[in-house]
Length: 528
Image 1 (cartoon, rainbow, N blue to C red):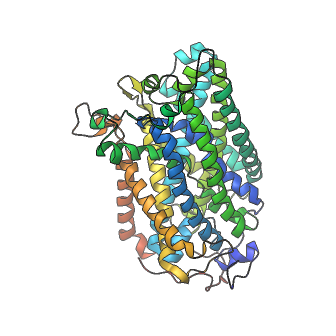
Image 2: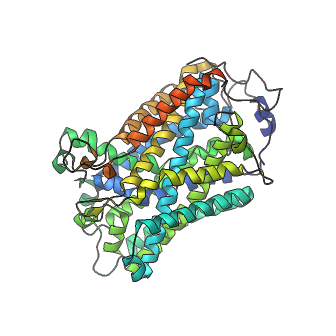
Image 3: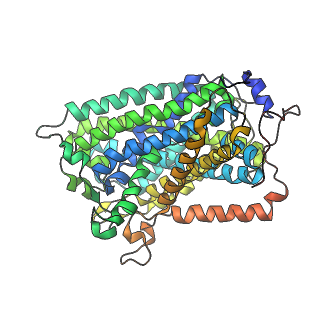
């Protein structure tokens, strides 16, 4: 407990930040941890984005890259835990930036966070649809032989609709689902690991330590496919880090649900760092199990670097189907949790009138759920994923470029929104009034490390993942382009224009919902 800190009850703490209690505060500390753990979802990210690691560095990049990048993300998580302990509001990240850096910082932070959350909704739901379709294919030859992107997209729409319906009708049901999700992820991951270690099909074997920890692969087409030299080290290899950066994200859900969590100043802070820590350990074990199950690395590359190629080599079809089913269910839990987090941020940002049509997005139904925000999140996620209807093959291998692009948009949007308040907290120094959970003087280096890592990975997320996605290369086509390089800069440009033409004339940052908000509970904002 920092010197001079006096604990407040949840409602009083929220009132000191300018808000009355509107959302139902019925989430336990475990439920708060559970939603972040569910959104991180090693049963989603480790499975669906495995190809990013395989094609951009191979087994060695995954085996060594995961723990290294996870350590940096842990530092980011500690920085955010300190912030949420001081400011436990649903707007969270946007609110922090506004109070520490002024309305402009809050406006851009909020929109980056919202864009990132919407992209994560899209990527997780589409990944769930892809795995569901493949699961059925393991048990039906006719289904597998009639595969089509249109069918997967229809399944994607159904999954979005189901997740939206669950979110709309009961926040209590959501808390229960998230609690179940934690155990599904823990037990399911253990089952998958056990299968890959002890139930390989007849004649299959495990890869050697050398194959897992030293073998490198470059399927990007850049630098002649070589796995040595500065080009590989400084361009190709960093792309593999998106696997970790994407999987271990979404833990800001603990922030967005803080107004619905009991003892939020401590519970939300612990929810962030614990969800990262346990996911980092579980994810590494899971990925190593994938890598040791590889029978023929060339065949995995021919399959686009997907986990399906590994399962097809190492497991009997019915057993592989069970593994995919476990992942699919985990991804559905993740989709529901993502929708919850997005709608709460949408609600809070609209409550402060920063989104056009805010009176609709901030409206609550009888269950105190922002119903229109949920619907809008589902529709936007659908629109963002439309390019996935275009078939993309590279040298005969199916490569989900559109999916990887949505992944990159989610990573860039979320992590840039994390980076702004983390930097502003570092700049505030000792003027920042910490909460019950804090980093002490370690914030001085931790916040800087976090900002540097976020900056580097945001640049990496914009890079082309295939050489044929570069305009001046033979064979170029728009379907190969990592369209994060289009979406993110265009979104920022439109926001910049919107700010200067309109927003700066009327937007003043967070709008309090009670008149007795304390004015001494946070440092004075400075203009950016």
